[in-house]
Amino acid sequence: MSITSIDQEFVAGTYGRFPVELVSGKGSVLTGSDGKQYIDLGSGIGVTAFGFQDEKWLASVNAQLGKVQHTSNLYYTEPCALLAKALCEKTGMKKVFFANSGAEANECAIKVARKYSAEKKGDNCYTIITLCNSFHGRTLTTLAATGQEHFHQLFQPLTPGFVHVPANDIAALEEMVKSVNTAGIMLECVQGEGGVLPLTKQFVQAAARIAAEQDIPLIIDEVQTGNGRTGTMYAYMQFGIMPDIVSTAKGLGGGLPIGACLMGQKVQNVLGAGDHGSTYGGNPVCCAGALSVVNRLDDAFLAEVRAKSAYVFSQLEGAEGVESVVGMGLMIGIKTVKPAKEVVAACMKKGVLCLTAKDKVRLLPALNIPMSELQKAVEVIKEACK
Ligand code: PLP
Image (cartoon, rainbow, N blue to C red; front, side, top):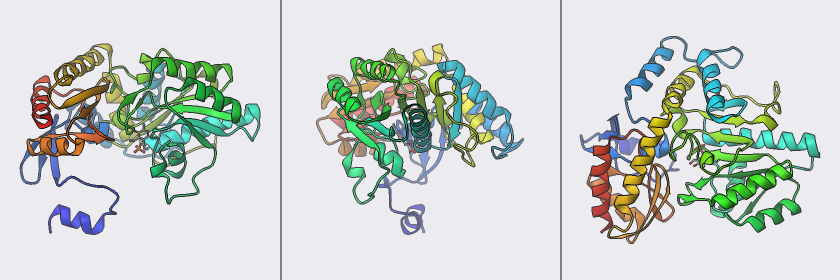
């Protein structure tokens, strides 16, 4: 039996998989079970920030595997402590809670915002405002946070206490803050699953201002946008704001499961012993991998990410069959004349793996993809769009 047929028989059918069995990867090139090679512009949906078998990342992970692979959170470990320190130093945040995924990082963010607001304003202050067309995860609470009805159907009742306002509508946000007891405002600076749509600076700054004026924790979901993906350490840094809470995951671990909830000055002491926890959270191997990722995201490296982004935009904007190119850094959405799925299928045939987001072709290559591979892949995309 092939990998595909075993998977189709035994793995829950929650994913529409492409007809490709991947067996290995090196750098930004993946190899299928039939020996076919692909330039990877998806990086496991924004996860393998430094590609496959990256030497520095592997060395960090292997060194920790050779020491202790898991301890529980009853004890201190160096990678967990050093990663929290590095994240705080790079952001100005004060404390970090480690989880295993983006949804769990958001669960923590929501708990922090609710506890802060309950203590300050009373038990009935629990509503979190998020945006229409947002995506915050698949747990019942983060689904409730997700402002897309079609994800909610047949899973009711979801966690109560979430309302949604249209993205970039300052008046709607102001109105909503007046009409509900708001415990938090939560948003993605670039709506990834929603179609790679950056919010306006004006709106993000207004949200930050309203949150500060009303003493409402502002949560920025950096699960997809974070860790260098948009050309800065975190996307919010390009919007001139300072969030109270930042959730992140995906690229943080470079391919190992880790999520993090970063807490700023205002909420740094909200969580106390017993308020939250995770068996695997802060796992030393995942933290060692993440530390090697975070330590490499310096100014020179991020400038390279922005230069690669500028290259992709310059090549694809105005190309035949391309209606528009949106996004930030190496988080790029291409609105094509042909259906996005058709373009992605054509690219795959030619050995380039791309993603979709809503009606767009989405690119999330490894941040260190070699320029020569990026150029080859962009040529393939241009052909496929025609
Ligand atoms: N938040 C955002 C912005 C995301 O893009 C995602 C995943 O795509 C999540 C949360 C959920 O992350 P995870 O799948 O790791 O739970």
